[in-house]
Structures are given as C-alpha cells and as structure tokens.
Amino acid sequence: MYLPPQFAAKDPAIALELMRAHPFAQLISTDDEGFPFVTPLPLHVVEEGGGLTLLGHVAKPNPQAEHLRARPQALVVFNGPQAYLTPRVYPDLQRVPTWNYLTVQARVQVGFIESFEDKDRLLKHLIHDHDPAYAEQWRGLPEDFQQNMMKGIHAMELRVLELRCKVKLNQHRRESHAAMLRLYEQGGEQAQALAGWMRRLKLGTPDT
Image (cartoon, rainbow, N blue to C red):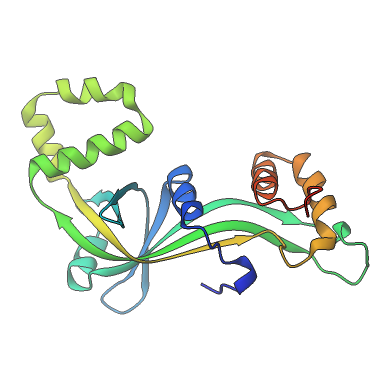
C-alpha cells in the first residue's frame, strides 16, 4: 500500500478500532499461477500476548484454502469509511478532486484449525460479534448437523506479522479542513463517519 507519512496512523488503537468496526475484510493470496486470489469474509480480532490474530473461515470448495496451505502468507484488507472530496473546499482554485478514506492492511501467517472444538470456538466468536441472539439456537442444533457443518469449512487463524493503517483526511491541507468538515457533516453515512474521524483528530475544529 502506498502510505505517505502524513497519512500513516501512529496510534495502533486506530487500526484495531477500524478492524473491529469494519470486520468484513478481503483475504488476498496468490493462486498456483501467481495471480491474486481474493475472498471477502468476516474476521474476528483476538488480542493476546501483545500480538493480533484474525479468525475466519472459507467454504470447503474454495480453492484459496489449498493455495494458502502451499503458500501460508497472505494480505488482509479492512476498508473503513470513504467519501469523495470536492476541490471547492480549498480557498484557491488550482486544486483537483480527491478521495478520503481509512483502511488497514495486515500481512498474516496462515494456520488451519482442524478440531471440532476449535472450529466451534471460532464460530462462536463470529456469532457473538454479529448475531449473539443466534448462539442458543446454534448450541441446540443436533450434533450430527453441527459436525457436518464443521466439515464444510476451512477454519483459519491468521497471525498478524505487520499492520499498516492509512488515515487519509487531507492532513497536509489545513486550509481545507473547516470547509471539508462542514461538507462531510452534511453528507451521507460514509461522509459523516469521516467527519467523526476529523473531529477525533481535531481537523477542522478551532484547535487546528
């Protein structure tokens, strides 16, 4: 990822917050011909021992599992809020449009989870993240049904080797911040989310 210094998030808590708020990620590896292969999937973030591990699974027929068994490193991308920015926010005319966004990229070491108990624990993490009311229904399903479901997935733990977080909010163009914040506050959900990050980073506020 191209990461100019002014857009590199210095606080690791920002990356962690983005990963948890936007858990539907892209798992990117290469196929047997060296071409990128991408699977969109939700991931659960685990903090332990000062490191991060991402838990998720793909369907049994998905060939990416075999790619990853052969080449067990991959890239995971989490995309946060994003929105267009008009050059009308600048006081001078010689500016061009741009796009603001937040994103996290993690280089990971892939390991596979094989036992029923460990797969069940992984699924319960994901259920708790997205549909905790379903947990009781899952626990009540017949054991043979659960066993068959577990056989239908490749469960994975992705140990984070390197984490890069990009927060692109025109930090280097202070003259645009006040107008940019007002514009995003009046926009749609994505733009308003960016406005929230601007306020958090004190861009466009009287403190800047």
